[in-house]
Length: 275
Ligand SMILES: [Zn+2]
Image 1 (cartoon, rainbow, N blue to C red):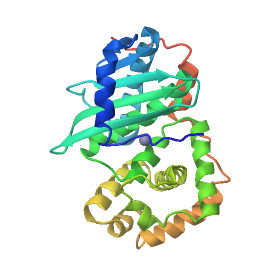
Image 2 (cartoon, helix red, strand yellow):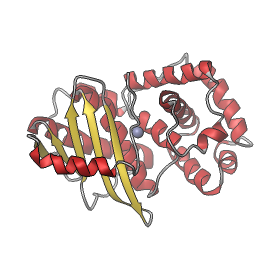
Image 3 (cartoon, rainbow, N blue to C red):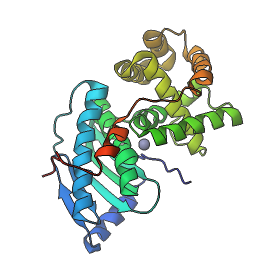
């Protein structure tokens, strides 16, 4: 099954440097759009990914922060490896003085899975990185990025959350909120991060979720919970999430995400704005 962490910051530099060194020797193609440069096995794939990356960059930013991001001063490098399997990806960021100064993305898997799940997920990380100008708590960064994926992936993460709760009860929210590195139970962590993000977004919408994260990082999660969701502290929020989950896990999301809508268009990428 092989769920991979989809974002790591730092620690991948050596690999990235190696990839850069090998790149000119690989047979491949590239495409450039306003905000992305894509290296892929064929020009068609490179153009398709660049076009969808721009599309997701627009729609995900509008959905979360109410407006599109200004063009980046330097395009985000994207490397595509096509395999026969499920899609996964990694985006690494460098931050300085509250801004993204460096970002690069790697995606691999079947092209239809990349377009429907891994690409919108990774682009969502870039939107959050630009908006916050620094790293987010892992559970929220991953959980909220999973909300951009297609229904198939979201249902898979509903199951991960349910399995985790059955198996061990999961993390108490005050503990989940303070996790800084990916724990060994990655599937459980992604599943719970997804479920808690879905709960908070369904309860208060996306702008409130972002304000909660900003205040939680700055002034602690109890105060942010009280200010934005009206529960007295993160422990109370934990109780509320658990009772919501026992019902919501039987009422799986039916709404389309950007990933779902793009699956249909994947066969006909007219309207692409690749240049
Ligand atoms: Zn991720």
